[in-house]
Length: 490
View 1 (cartoon, rainbow, N blue to C red):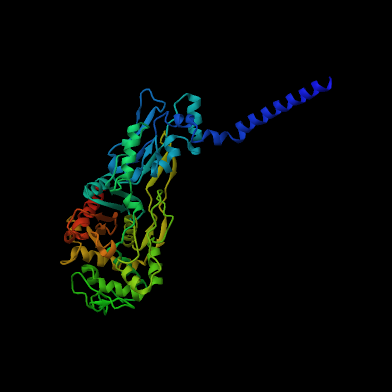
View 2 (cartoon, rainbow, N blue to C red):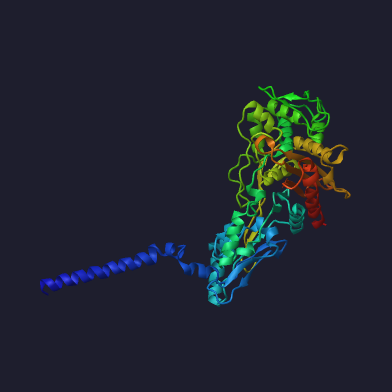
């Protein structure tokens, strides 16, 4: 072979080698990245080629899928009572993606989870169409409906928990939205989503999990817990030696009370009529460091609380003495989600043990085989059983005694006892905004068990300022949720 031909042969050989290297690089090294690339339309077409698995409540699907004629994407997501369930499920949209359970459990719902490999392989061999699995929630449909309908056209949220297990029974947020309204990929879907995002009332904000509020007087149960646990008070029926008004430490500012006789009030009486002076003084006596310690035992300052949807961090901060005193009545720098205050109430109802809240009970394959099951797990011993029982006594006084602020939550059913605490949280510059109405409560049955703990917050911007109270606006909603849970267990 002459020299020019040899060069051509070598060059051609190098080209063939480069082609082989490139082909192998694409097929083996970049295969996964290309297969899942956001610009790979085949991925999306395959994703929507079959019906999506369902999210289950009380054994029934609250989601579904509908076929789309003549479209590349053959199926899109639907919801039953979408506005009611959106705070639980989130959305799954062909145009903007997915959130919450629809996103976190996407692999199960689409059937692409690695744990479904055997099921999918078997279906492929038998010629059966691949199906998505299902997500079985802990939600109680009656409780969710009571929460959603109770909030009505008000802004607000409800969180309800089973104190014994941590299972979330209700998670409502209003105003809400229907995820079905933008589940497709049309121009109308895009316009609907854009309109919801820009809505000043924030219907897509999950207020139960992702909004933090000043907890107001509901936080006084945490302050009472800290005072009892740290020996600041000897008992719940002994005078607290508190002046009225009470001068905030290190200042000339006097703190007063809205109502009730609060000078030297006992802890029980102070919670019953919601004395600001008593709990501010107790918070100062406990100290900021110990108040933080107690709040954290209830779940505050936890930045990674996943249920599995991540909740916003509820905060009890490092503060100076006057701010710490105000924190003790829920009107300082501390802030809480409704879920967090439901956790506080649940721990008290469960004799001091706080269970980790969770919303998914099981993950199942399309043939109903259980892939994963959740076991309840303790998060902390928030207070001792003795302290928890004292707090229960105090909270039951709030609801059952004449003059208590929580009478609207009382359930007139044989063997049912309710404990609660009202809260009216000021907010805005110089407290000029309309206050938030809070109520936390639990129901206890004749055998001493507690099937439900609830937290309700109402941002009632349409009410007159003087008519806004936790006992008036939030307590009736909590009562309806508790009754729904109790009745569903009969």
